[in-house]
Length: 348
Ligand SMILES: [Zn+2]
Image (tube, rainbow, N blue to C red; front, side, top):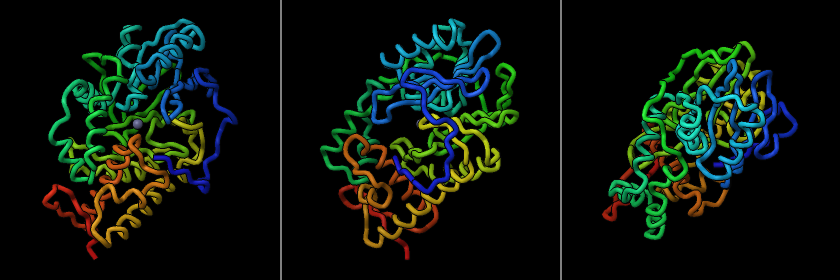
């Protein structure tokens, strides 16, 4: 969800982004590849790190022609026809993991990922081509979907695999606290939860740089969603905890290299801004539930933008994430009616 806050004191480090498909140097041996995406989200930032006579690639773009063409151009350009010796993926979303299998296959390179991200990616790829499960219909009916919105969910189900090239059957596990040498730098893995199950950030203490993936973005508040697989999940609690934890792990003047937007400083202020944004949303939502409300009625409390079919699944997942958080704090109760629809009411 895109909630732009003018007041966030984010300080951009570079005046401009590289053009779509181009690279820019961030530091010696560390390059920013602006990968175009054919979606509402127009780009993702990928990172190329010199690693001896090879490259370590961090994140990969979606498995689509536009991205493959950019990679082909980059191999002979910025990468000077030297191979990728390792592919690190921050988390399982298609814009990050999409070309990982393709890159690994092409260079005979290993895939480095956290275990939860790798395993969930394999599960979601396996959904492609399957019929929608009953649990999914029950979940979105409970959220308040109309029949035509359920049809839309059926159409969207299994789309994940369409944007992700076949993943390697084996991977190298990374986890929180790991230290990885890449070229002359050492990078520490910092794991965040809530946007995805075990999102890896890479932090170089010596150069004061954080590759943040989607864990810390300058203008976008990362989507935190509940899905039909785990209807009672409380990812917002994980997310808020991760944001607070991140503040302890990184200094406030760290240079943040985010997956979307531009490199910036002001990490602690931005983390505080994100945390308070969610607490504001929770308070508004609690208030809205003076009268019984469904998950789909919660949108006005959480989003400024209009919710249509294109962002319905994300918005609903995020609404339920906030409602489950309020449930966990005993601030609302929920009751399912005879039509299978959940109604949330404020406790006091
Ligand atoms: Zn993501």
